[in-house]
Amino acid sequence: MSDKLDFVVNGRAVSVTCDGTVPLLTVLRDELGLRGTKFGCGTEQCGACMVLIDGKPEFSCSREAATVTGRSVTTVEGLSNGGALHALQQAFLDEQAGQCGYCLSGILISASALLARNSKPSRAEIVMALDPHLCRCGIHNRVVRAVQKAGDLMAAGAQP
Image (cartoon, rainbow, N blue to C red):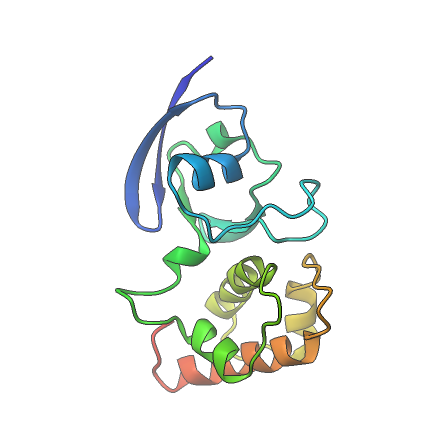
């Protein structure tokens, strides 16, 4: 069965014809070519597939694509603005907060949602916001520093 799905991805209106029961992640990666969002566990346990739906972090691996009709989806590709890095992306580079990088797209998405509602989060707030993410590289302290730094950059006028 094919459904026509109309929604916004990274600020651009898209229309996709597909089985609406397939995971949103599949539509993003296979139909729209947005490969930044990763498939990790497929069971909402690792956060690699996280995207923003109407500004809220959501797992895309288990969410049916049809549920985003008429909504706005932001992937990690949508964080940058006209090729300029998002303050988070710059802070993660500055703090070397990536090892293998597989989980980073999901972490960046959740961190961007946190900073959108609280530009000066405490360490505990950052840890809580990133709790749904599993990273086996052991870079947690660097990730927290990067999120704090991004908040500082944004407070100083950097592009969110």
